[in-house]
Image (cartoon, rainbow, N blue to C red; front, side, top):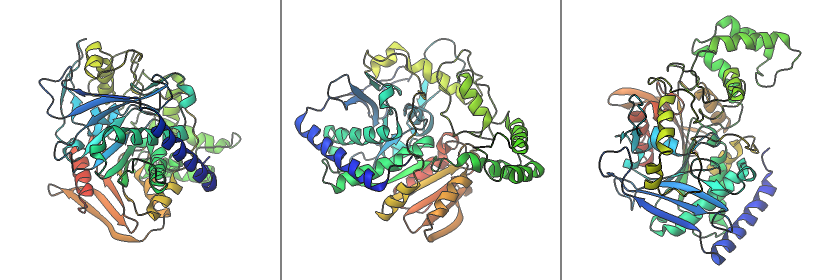
Amino acid sequence: MVVPPSSYCFRIMLLSLTLFLHLASHQIEAASEKVEYLPGFDGPLPFQLETGYVGLGDTDDDLQVFYYFIESENDPKNDPLILWLTGGPGCSSFSGLAYQIGPIKFKIEEYNGSLPNLILRPQSWTKVSNIIFVDLPFGTGFSYAKDVISHRSDWKLVHHTHQFIRKWFIQHPEFLSNKFYMGADSYSGIPAPAIVQEISNGNDKGLHPWINLQGYLLGNPVTTKNEPNDRIPYVHGMALISDELYLSLQRNCKGEYMKIDSENQLCLRDMQYYQECLSRINMFDILDIYCEDDSLNNNEVKQRRSFTEMPEAPPRSSYLTVPAMDCQIYGFFLGTQWANDASVRKALHIREEIGKWERCYTTDFDYEIASSFEFHVNLSAKGYRSLIYSGDHDAVVPFSSTQAWIRALNYSIVDDWRPWFLNGQVAGYTRTYANQMTFATVKGSGHTAPEYKPDEGFAMLSRWLSNVPL
């Protein structure tokens, strides 16, 4: 449940005071080191990579946040700085670095037991921006805590991310003048706007260091948690279910597909037929092949196949069998083998306290924020820029669902719906609103957009950061 505004403001004041006193009276527990090479990558790195830990607790081993910081390959002193949070909740932002927007990716080749190889991604977003990829919430990636479970909730994720970035800036004052943006995707569409609001309120309260906050960008974002209800009209429009089934679902379920009355047998019958129609569809990209994933436990498989629950985290990291090379999850498998290699951990300066690395740790999370809609309203009123983008073949968070909550903001349109282009071809469609919000689709892309369409994703970001119309 969303915290009422009055309670929220009180919590912000307490958090600001706590942060200020802590930063003023305690030595910041932080350690960062340059990474000169990466096992699996041929030659020296052609970009500046730093990894490190930022301590948020009272002792060095209490709450330790791990991050990857990659300087802009263009002009790090003047290019924007983006803090990136991957979805889940509970997936390492290494996902963003290696699979979506970072400068490296895994070479897709047959796994023979040796260390997977890395190659460059030409469309890395670090070509035009500095990016911090952070492992939060705790238990995610290489971050750790004495008591992980007690630190895993929406609001704690918000507070921890806010504390992290303030402390990171104290360790990196040379970036304080850079324009700062919050970036996130998937489930992090819920906490990210709240994080931006905390940073903004902290600035207003005089919290130090002051952050040059400009706005935020969200990809395929969960927002209202009503997305499962929006999937059915989406998949009907994509010709995955028949007109007759769609009309029957509307008539018998009356638009509610998440909380179905157990006595509504007609709706339950329709939903079973619906699930059968989609049982072999990859909901993350309906154009992609469907792959069985044995890394998901039975409960997660049930959720994934029901399509009536909230979008769950992408696949976990413990594979019983090697996935097929043409499956998207094959790259996740390679990442798990790579990150658990001793030479990789040494190169990344990982502490010995860390056990087995898993890309996503999705259990024991307390869902406290029902919707991030009100934060978008507040941030728009403060004049922050925002870019909201969707892969138009994502059925987990359909673009139509994102359009619906943006439309509910009721802002006037500055630049109406039109195609945007790359190399003379339609790359997607876009619309700009008076509250400095830009919405864009990426044609033919899934969840999330840059992973499937890296050229289009890079062009979209570059133009938006430069205030150039898409």
